[in-house]
Length: 199
Image (cartoon, rainbow, N blue to C red; front, side, top):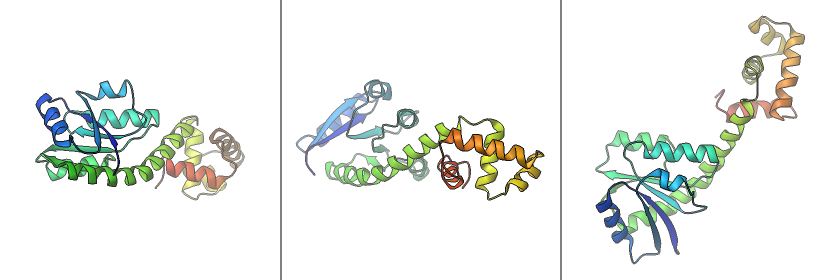
């Protein structure tokens, strides 16, 4: 696999020491931290996060990456994790989930697989964050017009739905395209989908 940077986040000193010992002698360089704030204060440029799934650790890491757009793969772990706990973590965007104690080989495999998934996932999450920031520039009415356009409604149908004139819809539509920096309607619809306004 080659030398690899693993950012370990775990509030339990003995477990941190155990994980560092487990991974010593492998091509994994472990940087141990007690809590997410120690990492988010000086966010690493590369590597994989290995985070103990306790409290709001995962939420804090995901929130930081969403705000900053700096995505790193996350491998969560816990002692005998409940299947529902694993499903929740994966649904939040976690790359893999391990049960502690684990072996160095399991971690290395999770790193390789997590990196591959993270490249695709980070790209999608960055697109969503960018789309959401664009959509936030819209007024309430422009947002309603965008949603209606994304649902496939014509200007006349939008006007009837919103109880405004078709000409007013055209004005809102032009303003909406301009604020989204979209050159045409299909690009605005793509932005709406990436921002999760429509499915």
